[in-house]
Image (cartoon, rainbow, N blue to C red; front, side):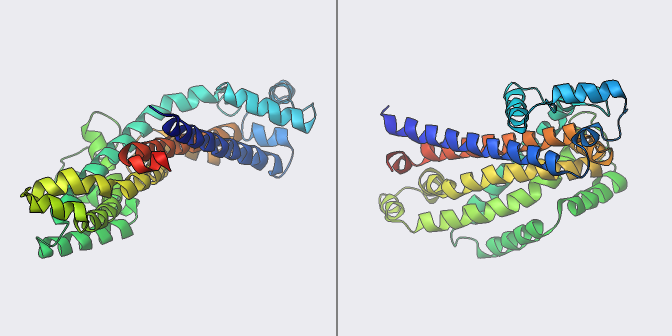
Length: 311
């Protein structure tokens, strides 16, 4: 392997680290500019004693120069130390770690289902073979993209849980409890991805290499799946990376609708109790996941299109 792909990958990784640093710095500045004393902000609605205040001052280096405070914050963050919740009286990493798995399971299930639905819809309706199916699919996709996820969730709950009793109404007991939340998040994602993927397929089907393949007698289904789909994946991969970040944000709301544990419950409790260390950690963690997913999408881009490795 020559050095160009490695340099391209290194550039994307470096850009991701810069974005992560910027997000962590913005979160820290938000703490500093919050109204009132910084110690009061960190204590929030938790127990307020002289010992706890002394502990906060020592932990956040608030008795030292501002630059030292900031560098110490970055050092602790780089080491995985997210601080302590003085409302819950527990390490923030422990609080978030307990709730991370349900949210990631929901986001991954929704992402997988959304991508699968988008591929099926786009491949089935690309080109001009079934215009009626294409119109019906485009209308349904537009409706899904325009509908807020919580509304989709309420409709699914009303019909499939309350009316027919097919799925649990709330909770996190087994795969059955994951189906409706995952479908709720996946449907808008599938609608948007299918539109982008179909446009890419339509453009690819007009390219000369497709005409050449057809002239050699290659079957239309093979042309679509083996030749056109790879070219249509480029914009869809970029969009999928962005959509995964949206999924995490949407998961916070959907978890509330379906009464599931996860970061949504943690974030809501932290905001209502003014538990700033947890809020800062959730913001930083969300930025880290968003950067990681988009970096993976960029690297996938390099694998899908060899021309980008040489550019």
